[in-house]
Picture (cartoon, helix red, strand yellow):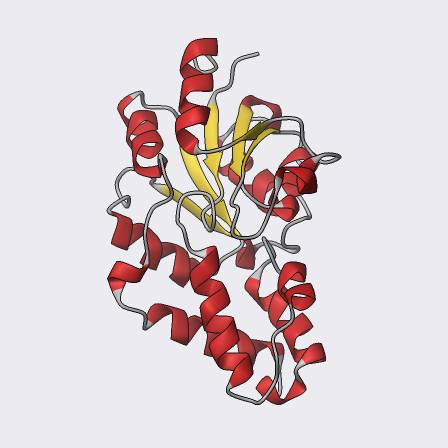
Amino acid sequence: MTFSALIFDMDGLLVDSEPVWHEVEVELIESYGYVYSDEVRNMGIGMRVDEFAAILQRHYPKLGDSAAAIESAITERLLSLPPERIKARPGADEIVRCAADRRIPRAIASSSSQIVIEHFVRLMGWAELIPNRYSAQFVARGKPAPDIYLHAAQQLGLPPERCLALEDSQAGTVAAQAAGMTCFTVLDQSHSSLEDFAAVNGNIYSDLFEVMNEIETKGLFA
């Protein structure tokens, strides 16, 4: 099967930002005297920030009087980090530039807010290379619901089954598959292992260089 478009997740897939998000969350939570548990952290991997902020509020109520206030606090801390803290994942720049050179229709479909997407894309120098950037904040449900992937496909004018999604999280992988897309999951070992995806997806890759090789050798965008 060949595809007509490439849809990227952002955090943990294109940008090595999951550890940075975690650091920001730890600083905020511990500043209120709580201990941030791995159990709570794992609930939020791949989720929309406002939905995860609601989970944080239930577990750590002193963080803010609303999920919106907690989301705002996390976002402000993230955006204030030195630019050099935000780095591309291995192979990310290469696959983005390859897709642009080949004029493959492409988009970002992220759980992050639009302001965070734009911030990261600007820091990476990808603004012109990925012209279509969509945040789950503007759809009814965040990942693992399929809404953001269905929205991205609609905006590209393509049926979902013609889109190849690239993800790193279980929530994102489930979302892409629920939208009817083929999903290649690229492991981000800061939060996941191969065993985590045993019953979720058979298309698992160690990095984006491996995905590029798969695309080229199998002619997936011929």
